[in-house]
Image (tube, rainbow, N blue to C red; front, side, top):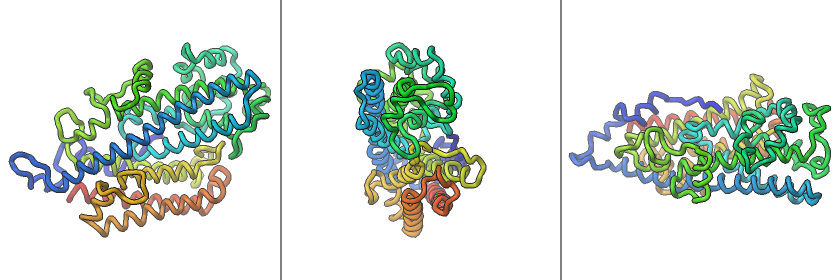
Length: 413
């Protein structure tokens, strides 16, 4: 999804190094040693990259690989008459875990996810069920998708269209009305109204889901390798190379992780440590705040686009939103724990601007609390105009303001 970034000029100035973002630079000695604050920012960056970005992308790659394997197995079992409800339930659990890892990464969609079009490639909605029904009615398309070893995965986009790929195409096959798909349904004919009269079988649907899961896995491998470089599993690196996917920062051969960790050094696109902080806070955390409040919740709640509802078949929209805001917490805390790491943006603010840190912490907690209440209430797809939706949207907008205030303060102090 397209992001709306605030403080764009500040981000460009800090990241690209067109101008100094603080008088702190004047305090360096002739050897250009880092100031106390810059040393702290460097340590924050190392903690963030190694303990937030890397593990989440590793989990995403692992979970989507498992999802692909399980769907391929389910396709074979359905044909053999041995598929069980437990098999389907296990697939749904893996999907939920993979989905959570992806949504928990959305505070750092800047970089490879955006540069290589991975988002929206794996996360577009709403699903065009009419187009999907038409595609799955073609024996030629089904045959091509079924041939996973000879281009079915690679050609999924051309065969069924971009809007049918990724998480939500798979979600439609394995969930329905907020529940795991029933074995009996997959043994029968698809009854969704968009499929009326087409006699699409569960076997055809699983052929589609397995091929799309392979494409999803490959793009998540690309994300992992793009950030971790040679720290990614060799098998994942090999698959990305086989797919001929780009994985390095434009104009060089550095991974995105190396590029950020080597800020201020020759070859890095990040000229200052304050620029790195602005990237994390503005391009990352503020970007996903704006999307969740203004688009994911806002478009349906305000009636701009009533059908713009994420994860409607599993009815887990609020879980997606909660993971999105959790990704902000991880970015601010420097890890996925419940308290900030010593080398984190939150602790940095607590040291240098305690009032701002307390305000940011309160607004983060308020947003997460609002989404916790929403998760326990009516699913967003059932009632996108609820008081819970409004409370969550307002709390996230308030959090966004606090994030941008913190980013501006760090850039100028």
